[in-house]
Image (cartoon, rainbow, N blue to C red; front, side, top):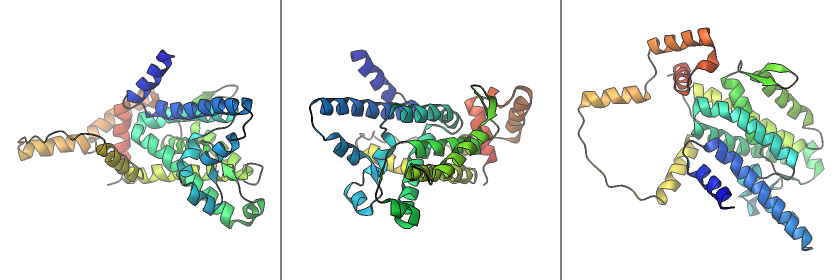
Length: 296
């Protein structure tokens, strides 16, 4: 048991491990709810439904005002095995691409913003679209909106990247993303209509996130700022040290750290792609290629 706790602790202690941490949070919440449900049912109490309602996103605005935290808890909560397995597999496969190319911070931004966008569209449809109003109030759980945001973001970023699917062989991820989006569109009038609408909200966010990023705007920056601020409240600030740098040196180091790669670097990367394919690029080369594609 101690080794399990140590593995979990190490997973959260490691830097640049956001993908595994997101998956682990979902799994831990799922395992906790399974154990809690079993204990409550064996003891003959009926509190499990109440606990789930505290974690699920309600469609009724007044109920949401009483449980505002559900805007976040719903996309870390799952009820059944197939739901979490499907979501976590997709999160891992497509999250690996996003993390490798854009880094862990943007992966987390996509996950959270995708979940919030899914919640927003879900609430709008249930309170303003006649078909949904007639269905009455509902509750929603699951990370599908967040995961679909990451899938569509990866497909927008790398549309021709291929996965080898069982029975189908190599398939470009843009077709996988389109299939999942169309599946959600068709399901928006089915039994899980609210969930599928939320999926579409996440998908739209994933597309907009990458388009804005290519235009030089990071939609996740407010999240990063809020997190840095909260982290700073619990972190002791080191004493300030004053050092001297010549203006020429400071300018040169800034340009190297944040400026775009030179045309010579891009030519070398493009030659490598033509020779060995995109998958042969290192993480640093992929990030340089992305920075070069951004508008001023």
